[in-house]
Length: 602
Ligand code: ZN
Image (cartoon, rainbow, N blue to C red; front, side, top):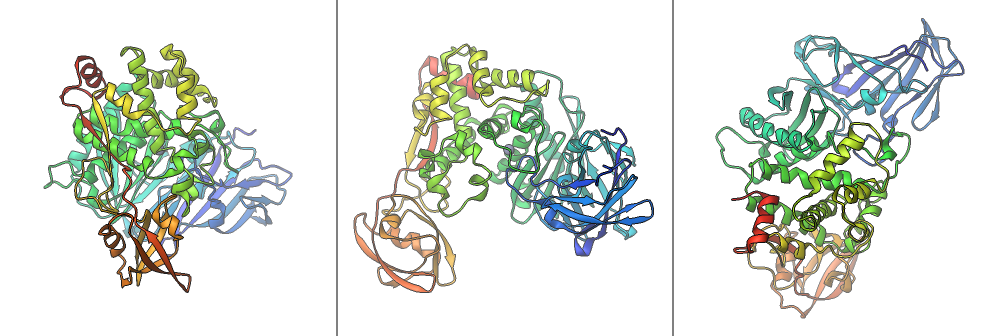
């Protein structure tokens, strides 16, 4: 193992062609032929992406001499034997507008190290130096935003940066371009908000609100901040939503309309969602970036890394993201319960929750959650959404059975002390054991059912103990996300399918198990062109069926590929699969006290 640094340079050499040119120099390469490896996946996004496929060409030099390079496998190259220094060069095509990969055009560049930097095998622990080079067009006036420490570069400038090792290097994404920048302080830690893309956001308000969210999370763990600085790298686009956590930063994509504008003082649903996203990624600074499953310690980036614990890392994070908004006072109790009701609705809309446990959903994330298809609502459950409900149920269980002495907060603090601060990975049963240890309660039955089983969660009963009533009703229409009492008259009948408008009808995307559509033989991909002998436009499928009395049989005409089919469908009354939560008017003294401790008072 060499202590010589690996030296990288990355140059946006052809912004119009979306190409970075990268060099990686190793002082003492493997004399048998240095292997250069590029990750197959990026931590935080559990899908094989094979980033090496975006390398357009590669070459290698020893001194001034070109040496041969051959492919070793789909993620690796083998350089001819050399004594060094060895420089491996390559061009990377970067045109994926997401938080997981790399992007370059004439306006900006963005990359995760896992998409652009090779790892010279055998040098996993060597320190890294990175020269971030500006585009050749000096008129571009690009700045640089990254949490990589500066070695020899002006603040926000191109130049030399460093990382302790390769895993650190690829955990600090880089934005380059002409972005807006705002700064704020939370818990004594300097925070940056970097905003790229066209937007007119109210930066002052964003900083004010984000500071409250960050303070909330920092306070939860009752310890010094684990990072010295933090950056929200945000790209505003027309339509988009997504985030990826890193140890000192996160990358976000949002719709520009979700960002608050100076002339809009109210808390819009879109802005509430954006704050929830920021809160989610920030909570990961502890939960998954430092408190990690043993399976990720260290990351093995050449193939799938299996763990049954994603429900704890994504589900608990999904519980705390909105709860923090409530706790720091950015949303009121009613607004918070609306968000919880929407999460519950997402879980209860599919029968997959009755077949796949949370532990299995976590384990199979690589091939199921991240590779969803037309049958997913019938086959899988989200470890995010159901994970958040289990975190809620666990929090309430702990509070109730300990008479308010214990809550999920203590479990998180214990996870932080035992696994986050120490870097010791969480074993597969570690969360369950620690929750039992911290609370002194026997939680076997709870976890067996909630995490390893597929029984319905006893949410309604538990919420009632906390003065909250769980209500169910039919969906008012295809866009009804739940969370509130009925906004409109529910349909009289439904097909139980999800569809989207097609040029000459409605294309079926999902057929829910046991639904009228299932029983009639409708299938994903079918294009329904007529209901009851009358032509429909794409948006009319639901409303035409909605007007029918349940139990009536009507004909549907649909194309499957190029074959016209006539199906008989018996319209069904809509299921009560939409959930909303209400504060009970007078839950009694004990429940009121529990509710106030959980959600805060009025
Ligand atoms: Zn997450």
